[in-house]
Length: 428
Image (cartoon, rainbow, N blue to C red; front, side):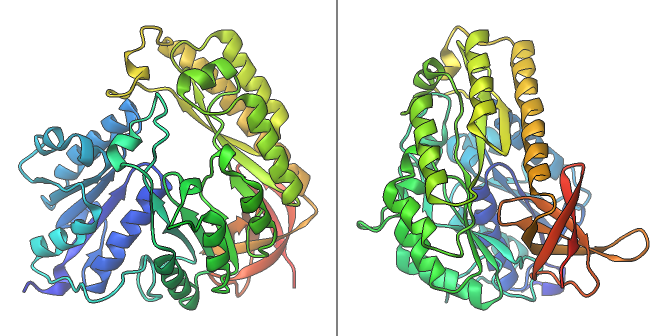
């Protein structure tokens, strides 16, 4: 067996929060057998967890593989993730040191075999569980579901990840309990389409209740589709003190014609009705969303409908994406593609609106008190400790904090806005 002091691996994660959660699981397994997580320039093996949601994502994945192959240590590059599931041969052709493994559950075993270590499969590997590990964080994404069967016309993910599959609730309970016991303060429930969670009749409301029973301080959803905001789910959220009143609900477009062409199963009015129901159920709810600019066939008038809808919906932030052709999807073969310059202009208008909405949300909170989960503490310009973290409504906050510690839930008065962060004063 090789000297474990020299066993080094780097992980690069592209794409969604589910990928990040899966990479953390790989890292936890590797750390458990003595493999050290390092930077790419010194790693013997580099793992790249790919995304394939758009043509642009594919290009970024291939670029990441080429960059990894050029690293000084001449590493073996193990490629996994959604692109690995759909385009194994093209990825393998990028270099002789490339190994493609679509099954993320096998990646740690492959890496340790390459390094000459041994993997223990004797127990559960909980992401970021051990407090002494570099991977430990006080805010952890816990994957509860995989797969999607929505088959939106722009999206390849159902082909890459398959139909919805629930992590058994008993497994979620044990992992969440272990995380809470290890000091995790916030658990982010994540999946490809978590509203479709179904473990033999147990649903997402049951997941929230089960995780809350561990005593973890905060629970958040990564994203939930609008039609999955059912009365039962909203009631469970409202009855759970740990649940953060922040929801990310993908809109994609505010035009009914574009939504229909995308294969989305709601109208703009139906979306508005569901988020209004969520606001009625959850006091002080903050909403963020995804918007796709320049979908094939989208007219200037329809783009204006989306912009107007986002203005009046009361979002605090928009995650804006320019449409990018993904081969294998229905939208990619449409002849009425929007010119790149027009897509860029529409995305720019949406991003300008997002900046305005975010600034307004932050300004509305000034003078008030917030609970901040401290995620890091650094030295300021005068060596005064500066703490940075996230509020329950997803604001990034910085404040001077003598004696502050990572993982603390600090009471902070919000005083002013600086760039994309809010500054505050710690309350005693």
